[in-house]
Amino acid sequence: MEQQLSFADSEYRHKRHRTRTRTRKEKFLARMDKPIPDHTTIMNFHHLLEKHNLGRQIFDDVNQWLADAGVLLKEGTLMDATIIEAPSSTKNKTGERDPEMHQTKKGNQWHFGLKAHIGVDARTGLTHSLTTTAANEHDLNQADKLLHGEETFVFADAGYRGIEKRENLQDKKIDWYIAERPGKVRVLKERPRINTVLINTEYLKASIRAKVEHPFRIIKCQFGFIKARYRGLMKNDNKLSVMFALANIVRVGQLLKS
Image (cartoon, rainbow, N blue to C red):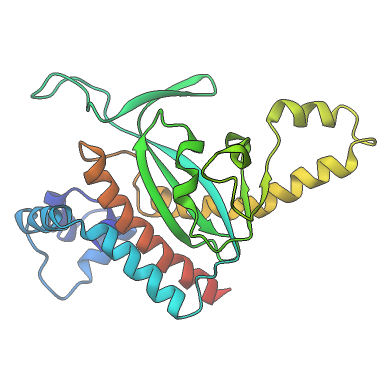
């Protein structure tokens, strides 16, 4: 619950007893019939998860449960990564930014923070693999860690071009469907009648690859994790592991409703 509501640890009791205009999450807290732990208890629980690396264990256990239930399939994988901003201010005790975070340029904009790399089941959109790195890490460097080993095909965006030439992936019997670079697609669209097949192929790749965005939408839009709250990659990896495990449960609920 604490992961999904995304309030600060000290806010929960205050949010529950708020009497004026309430958000949907605050109304949920108000309807609870059990006392809410104080922020010290919640903080100690966070430390327990981090100390024993329980976030990863929760992620693995949830995925094993989904696999045993026949929900998490292993036919193909979709790969992608997203940047999560971290505080860039130096107004803190150390007078410096988080040394484990780095800046990177995406388009014409600079970002400072970390990057979450995920491997997603091609049919269900459930996340089966996760790695956390600094934002300047190239997507290709984490590609081999996003495979579960049983997939026969992989879809990914143009950032993964050249993946089949990597030494640690050359012996994989996988069909790689990697998007063309935007510049080449623009050139193809200049002569649409001649390049109809190639253009439609890119549209098809994009439509299949779209499922990889669903977990990112859940953790950012529904859980509110749009900025890193902790210093260091290990703590943020622990939190992301729990959130992607919860995102898988949310995704299963969506699949059942549809």
